Image (tube, rainbow, N blue to C red; front, side):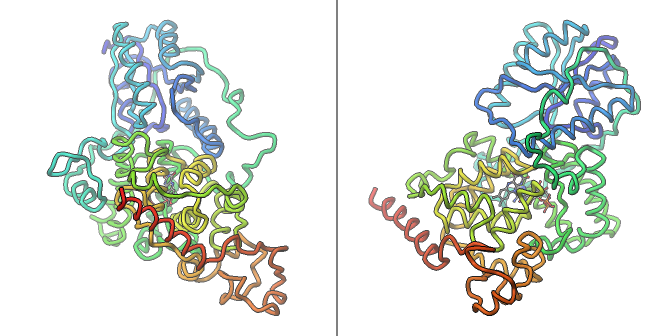
Amino acid sequence: MSISTPTIVWFREDLRLSDNPALSAAVAAGGPLVCVYIRETDLDDARPIGAAAQWWLDKSLRALAQGLESRGGRLVLRTGQSAEVLADLIHQTGARSVVWNRRYSAAEQTSDARVKAALKTDGIAVESFNARLLLEPWHLKTGAGSYYRVFTPFWRALRASYVPAPPLSAPERLQTCEAPSEGLDGWGLHPTTPDWSGGFSGAWTPGEDGAHARLEAFLSGPINGYAETRNRPDIGASTSRLSPHLRFGEIGPAQIWRAVKAGVETGRFDERSAEVFLSEIAWREFSYVLLHFNPQLAQTNYNPNFDRMPWRSDPAALSAWQRGMTGYPVVDAGMRELWHTGWMHNRVRMIVASFLTKHLLLPWQAGEAWFWDTLLDADPAANAASWQWTAGSGADAAPYFRVFNPITQGSKFDETGAYVRRWCPELARVPDKFLHSPFDAPPDVLQAAGVTLGKTYPKPVVEHAAARQRALDAYKMTKEEQGAA
Ligand code: FAD
């Protein structure tokens, strides 16, 4: 790279200034920077990000722009085909090099390879880096030379071999190069008619500062009980809630890893909880391995035996699930938490996903798509891999015949009932004994609690035992067909 010519830093899913290898490389090159975020119109086959994630992107870009400006820099916003936008910026600024951090869905990788080839043909230097994962998805291999299909050996291999690179601090001052920019307001990422995002702003602070505040809050207490409390949605801060920050790269997994390890080394954190927490970060890595080697992970069954699964089509049942009106309180609480806050506790994600694919016998793709639109952390790897895991079709998946009972799951993990009472306030006065199965409560108990099933709270859309049997029969049929084939 030449010392004096500008370098273009193409921000994508790495909306941070610290521990950002592409940004650090551009600063080290010595010339002025052109920092750009492109609203790409040429990502063939890529799904546009969902409505909730658009809300986050809007705020995250504002935070990034502010961070750059406070250091003398500027974020340029452009819409168009990435190769054309970059060529235009090169023409306008005289830049001779472009840097970015890598991304991993098939459409993005194809596009990046195309852009890289075009730039190189024009004599522009291009360099890419890893800012999103601890290790690249192709890094760890089994003894047989393939990618890991089972989590535990993957985690063991990662744990044994991963050593984080030294941290990169955010640049203190930036030299910048002027280039025309679009305005973020014109991108329409924040919902307007209607603005349904009221519950989001109270719950989240998008941006790098918000990400670090969230990490600190988690490390200053909750991490120590994580191994025990992470399955408890009724306990407010039982998990880190870092997922949307990780999704947009406001913080990187290496930064989290270093902070956790430092706390363990100084005796600040309980080692077992810290290990369990890091293993969850590793589930994210494992999802990216699966996505990299199975680019259709969000569309097709990882296990092709599930192609024979007799999924149903039932728009009314799907709608009841989406709206949190199934008549099963823990399922409804989860779906309403998702709608209001753009996030749902992991244990409840598993319960609602099991309910959709087993009790309702609806295809996991329908749930994946709803989550894609409504989750702030909707992630191309973690969402697809987790849905397939719950449905039984995924890698190292929960067996399909393990059908979660929403009543016992509710009683066990929402032990205090605080979670259901918060998100289904119409059930607030139902006694604990019947809170997770109000349909089993005697009429006088319901009356005293002010509940009329079918009016103030829905009757169950399916009966648990019958739905469970239907799911098991459907699964068995698939197995029988398999045997006959
Ligand atoms: P913590 O418990 O604090 O974990 C820390 C981090 O580890 C998370 O932020 C996340 O990056 C990672 N992580 C934790 N659990 C998992 C997991 N099972 N798989 C992959 N990464 C994990 N996570 C997403 O980030 N995006 C999604 O779109 C997504 N969709 C899901 C869909 C279903 C059906 C299920 C069952 C899980 C899904 N998850 C998804 C995984 C998990 O539920 C969330 O990562 C977690 O609830 C986020 O909350 P947290 O940050 O407090 O997690």
